[in-house]
Image (cartoon, rainbow, N blue to C red; front, side, top):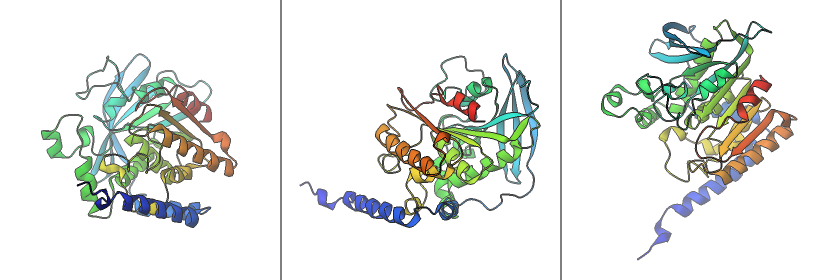
Length: 342
């Protein structure tokens, strides 16, 4: 017997319809309220603005086109983050300080995946995978690129997971579920850490504080969006392989628990949240064949973002590329765009 009327599908559809209609009416034109409610929803830790960050150099290597450093950044007594910093070899002849980019990896084995390294730290001379070594592409464009290891990945997995799992596994589920018990979210913790890494970026003598960008891919795209909403020191943002709607992406299939924020749909759908970055420059790139973040919902999000930027008189600050590819970084248009706007 097929009792489809017993399933909760229709309840979820109705709940979504009623909720989204309500928040459209409630928050139209009230961006500041939405921003403050969003900060509360992600459970952002309260230690922001505390003691100054400190760091120490762990290693340095000179390559043909850039210098790669690895540093340990201490942001609290209990949080230390390994961070790769890539410096262009050729200094900008016209100015003493240049543009810098906070580069955020997605799911995989961590920051090594975007700086051209295997999980064991050896040089990756093979195909770079879906991250496309995008930090290297950015440093080749002349940016100082700062690549933190997001908590839950690579060498920042929980100790048990590091001992028992493969290098591509993560600690997202355990961290996300346990943080919820404290009224926090994994997304909020990652945003907090990224804001402190920006504090570190501001200590680098080669960084122009008015020319700081951010690029994130996939799960790193989520962190790039949320950090850019809150931290206005980010002057321009590239979102790769993430822009969509909640309904079309994380509600449509199983995603990592780090995507799920309690009550977020009571505030806004994803395009409205991303629109809080406006009027600062924003670039969206997405693959037509991306199954995790489907293209038809990408188009919905882009249409909404274009309307948002137009309403704010800053349509010139928004651009996008929908390319012939899957869940992967492109960079074909976005890197030059970022160089232009910064």
